[in-house]
Image 1 (spheres, one colour):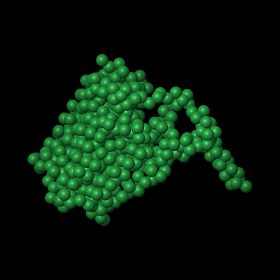
Image 2 (cartoon, helix red, strand yellow):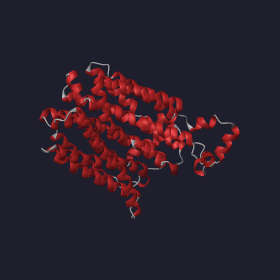
Image 3 (tube, helix red, strand yellow):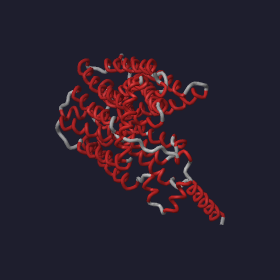
Image 4 (cartoon, helix red, strand yellow):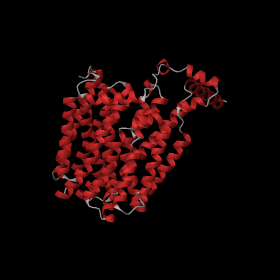
Length: 447
């Protein structure tokens, strides 16, 4: 009797929750799928760096050629950012993200089947173009399914994929490579992405589509229960006005401060993402499996950095700082700390000290990365966040595409990572100065 009564109470509670939030099922599906797709996004882009040494050996690729190969992705990713906002707004998240995931997964699968350097470059370009819509599409889907004041938690869950992916990629991809070789690793991850793309098409539904499929009476009841904020949605601007507002952002020095600063952030992030496994193998003689776990540990600290950044920014605001000022303070400090932890890596040090320094550097640079996206949400009106974010991301990944090339050539010329680390430290310091000197005030009042 007691168990039946308890079950009845649970059922009534569930019914009450569902009636208060009839969209809960699809909100859960949306966040879960976006988290998985985000992790796949970072695992797939990490595959080449994990297999760096094996591919160089099997395909007779030099370090400088590997640098070009590693940069092909980020260059394509960067230039794909600029038109994405308008395209995604026109097509919707279901079609744009589903097609993107399917396309990049096919490119990932094909990477395990080719034998020429030029074909590999073409597939890396395809991967970069395919992965570019991921986070703009995710932002649109979350904005559609969650009210503005309830968007923070689901957004944080989805964006955690940017650290979870690089963290699990080394041991997961290394395990696949040990058992099936680097070609089998590419094929396995690509096929998994294709399966998830089919799941996205099958299970994801836009809120507009969900409402359209309801009986008229139920649809009217749900629409009437929406908040006033949701009811007063501004009409979609014309393509011409969108492009005009987007171009206007380039007239403000704060835009350039954010772009130049983010270039330094992504330069350091992309250097670590593409060359960190090779560093431990080449400089410290670690095997594949040892390298995988060491790199994963470094990315755990990176994930902690993203969490600390948010809490620190909120605390500074509570203590009386301005929203933009608190973010500027954190991003500048984090970049300078990343540079400070990177410089000692240029000198001979043992594996323990090197790992400690890299963990601290990744903690700091991920703090800067997370704060940079907080700046994007602070510096412009909410209607222009996507436009500003695409410009910032374009600049960042333009610099990110240079990092592997510079690193590859410096290794080939010097025989070590010393000069590459010193260059990245200088880039981080210059980026901090860009934020400090150019990022002065919100763009709406910037002169």
